Image (cartoon, rainbow, N blue to C red; front, top):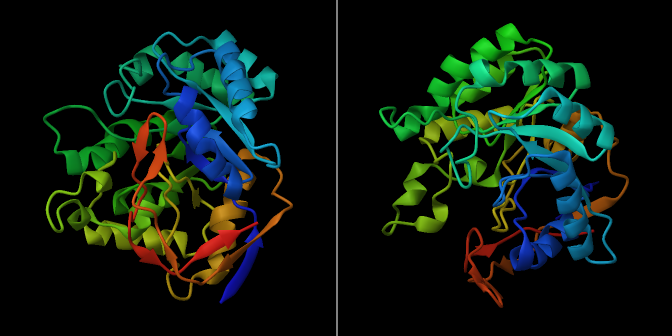
Length: 323
């Protein structure tokens, strides 16, 4: 079987920096036309000047025969200013502002501690500048069960946010629950959307423990029950424009292994159309062929600094791609 689609984009990608950046960027550049690049480096990308410098580092590491374009983001903090948001928009390189609740995930210690109390004027400026807010949607209160943190974040932060700032464009990143699906679908189309990862389409929380503890299947937000996975698959295969691909590769190679039956006609929109339409960017011109053929995922990808373990390491799959 062979399927030709428009070259896809990755709307949630971690490239890191230094040797790790140089090692992983060819894998994304080989398949994707563009990617929203996450800003949670050490130190984080909190200014437009830092985003431009990081972009230059990425461009230098991209293979010369690639058309890959990095779309930069700023890391929102309690001290981000309205003037910085204006600079970001004027740069033409910054396409969103990432909200990490402080302590929620990797390198989030400099994130937001009080969104409404310390960042609301910045959010108002983002409305004026038409810059989307990209949200890691989990509360960090240790008293909240880890499997409920997305649901509680929606109830306590996102629902009040869209009520107070209905014109703010929001992307709820790497959704994991039916609660997130229902929230996104309840909002005005074109203003609230969500990225979905391959791992949250393919795996439920049983994958964390099958055959013993599986650390390479652990990610944040953590995998949820099968009922939540099914809700996400249904949303993606429904044809809704509100959902688009964001691998959350950090830096593992996390592409789909297969496609749900009856959903092939929705695949191109999910991977290639919905994201650029939401961000107001042109769709890619190049095409990609997906072939159903045997392929064994490497056990690991070795680099001078160490090994990276990809998703489905050592397993046989039946789908590959080429530009």
